[in-house]
Image 1 (tube, rainbow, N blue to C red):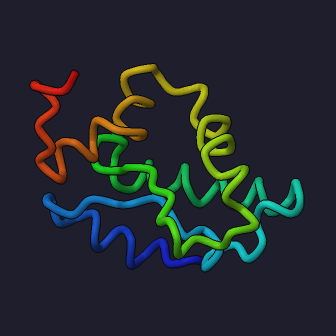
Image 2: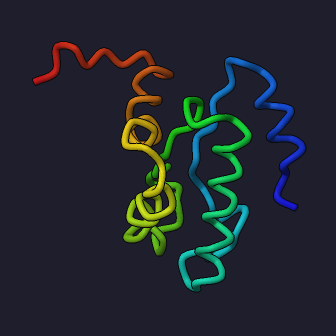
Length: 109
């Protein structure tokens, strides 16, 4: 297993968020095959289920993320959550990060 028990223990702490990145550590070369892609999707969706979508955020972890997966990373993130409501997707892609990092976008142009 990839650490569900530990993730559940962390999720029990209400102020802990989950940054969804560095999938290579859980599913090596996940972007190379359909099987790897499916396993990576499963890990991401299980993390979202464990923490709740409101405490998860997608991240590229650039430049540490393996360069070979970068062209597909956000394309896959979009595909893996396309069935979720738009507001949940917005949270995963940017709104949860704004809240967690206390980024004020009210004055942004």
